[in-house]
Length: 219
Image: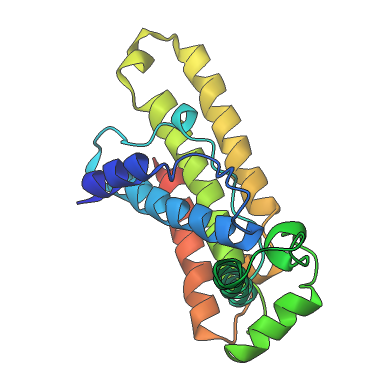
């Protein structure tokens, strides 16, 4: 099933950077996160089954997800879709006299900065703001960890490793271990291992990251 999903994503072009100027940055980010959700699932399946991956790093160029929280992102994407639908309806109802008024859907960049007023207004219409960006941070850090995990599989568990000398293998191991340690050192404070988490969802996410990293180290 995962393989079929990957094939379908490839056929839809989800593995490529979206250059459609009609889509807002938020809508593109939602699309990118869908790709990386599949990416994470495929990586997990590959590690657990020991089978070759169906997603090769050099065959996709989707940007790494931002840390913008899902609530603000979803609200901004919905607002952009609504604005585009309104413009489409207006263009069919009357002849366009000039360029449409500017809106967030094409002019306002999506960054890790605090959400704009338009994004805040849209967010307020779909519910209260979550207390922090824990979910987006967890998703982003899982993507980063899975990239390292795949390097471990490709460099240490491929058929070509048998042709390398032991001192070369040791250098590879040291380099990968350093990357894992760097990933852990640069974790956001909300995901730091060993820090007490009052929220059970946060605690499970931190525990999941720690368990996954320890399992990779054990390899």
